[in-house]
Length: 219
Image (cartoon, rainbow, N blue to C red; front, side, top):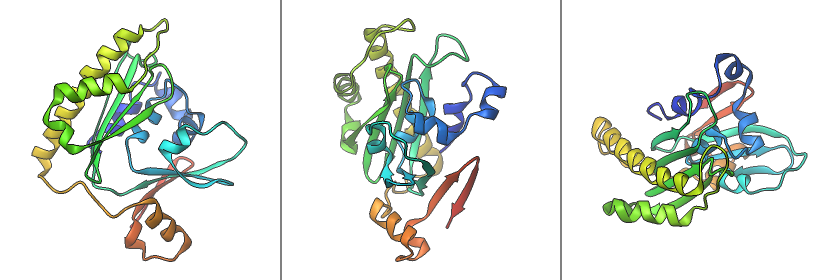
């Protein structure tokens, strides 16, 4: 992810707290201020629930709280360009606004959190990048922003536009650095479920599985 995961966690409170916090806890809580949720919402990933089964993370974000158990978080190994950025009043404070912009499966995905509500994702055609001013305006109009003691709705809307443009520029730098390989794949929920049920070859749905505090790469 070219440092996007690192950027989503390095500002969270302090080392002692980060050593206690987990990815699963951050995602299951679906907190409005969550850096981790904002990042994962822009990735091709699914949560595995004990009762609910495999659910795309964008769908999981909007589910009501219940007593189900989060078993694992699965990230499909989709070729991706992604950048995570946030604005904070102080280094270790909660974010005023958080933005993740990714490109995979021939689509542009913009996730914005700390608005100050749960992160949501807007999926657009890659052609939208041709007019960045229009893209930024569209993002500002599609997302709702609120006010609290960390910032006003208008301030958040403005900063979100700035961060979306900066994230797009960083993604373009990644492309120039690593080449112009296609950011698309056959990875999908159907392929992932086939892998989990043993009905498909492992290569059909390569995933990174997160359980507890360890990552397991399944190739």
